[in-house]
Image 1 (cartoon, helix red, strand yellow):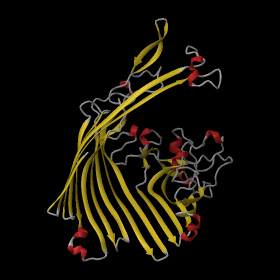
Image 2 (cartoon, helix red, strand yellow):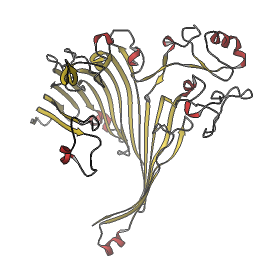
Image 3 (tube, one colour):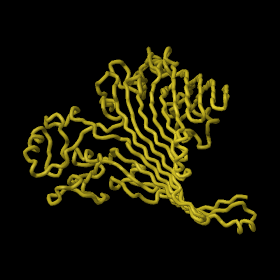
Length: 510
């Protein structure tokens, strides 16, 4: 790295940075395994006791070497005038060995402008403003996250009998009869995935920085996404890595810190962050056509649930509609789950699948409060996620034991959340073929993640013990939730259970 910084005429600050990096990763692996080893005490250093030709011991040997390199060059120019106006221009040239020949290198520029408004005379007159800075930036970043050799087209070896001989070495790209896993097809055109992002930001501080934080708005556009794509099996391969399609994303992030109370004995510090983002697929491998086999759809978010929808639960008044379904081999009765018939043919086929919801939350938040009073410290942290879909898997309702108490359908409770119970073997699953369709629920949660209480011993006591500080504390992790939109689940872990921990400790310094 070479850096140059110089200030001219007390107001003009110029900086130049030159950077070159080269990284290399070599991963070597080796392994050996066998069954029916004579003694438990025989380890790797006694592997000569096994018989490689024995079909009972199933001896296996393996080794491998994976190499990857990344090389980069960067230049950055900075200019600032009078600590008020700043501009930064930069460019990176990155080369990744795992990409295809002719596509390993690419250029990634960026530019940023900043105006420190709080240094202007007309802002300095407003004494309640401590800091005010406006930022605008645009830049391109690259992603080469693909396995080494993915563009080369692997071959693999295996043993097979041939012409009366056995254990002859053969090589192939894909041979399902002899291979447990299938190789991907080579792509000689795989290059960088590139994302262009615009960012508009504001740094602020008020009341002598008793309140301060940042506000950022951003818009991104990603081209040539690196994705594994399913391809027709007649090619001899299940899929390949390709640069397919475009996505866009926008969001806003707010970080707010404040010191609401500060007295001689008591202090309250709070920190709050809130983020909203939404992504959308613009194009895919075939332009404006969806890729349902990969779960990708134009106009939808990147990670969605795709499958059969539902129209609630069949009721007695739906007898005429149920008859049309049952004429096609179904056996619907009142209380069963009513699947959503997208194409109106009274059958559930692949054409009836729909996008059910987004897997990832669109809004996240966190809030931490720290209180201190005469050596006593209390910290409370909260987290929340909102605006997504969670799949519970539905309720089997086999009318057996170990069923949690839920709101299920009966002739007297037709507005229930879940379908009616049907007697059946619990281990065989629900007797309602569409029981899982009611498992998709709108998800959001707000929970207290951590509560910590501590006491710092007074300095008068520490002098007698020759300690610089001493603190006793207690902490509880995951104490409780304020909101869980899906009954029976902790949406923070995505499970029906979570760990609640209690910690007690002493911290001393000498």
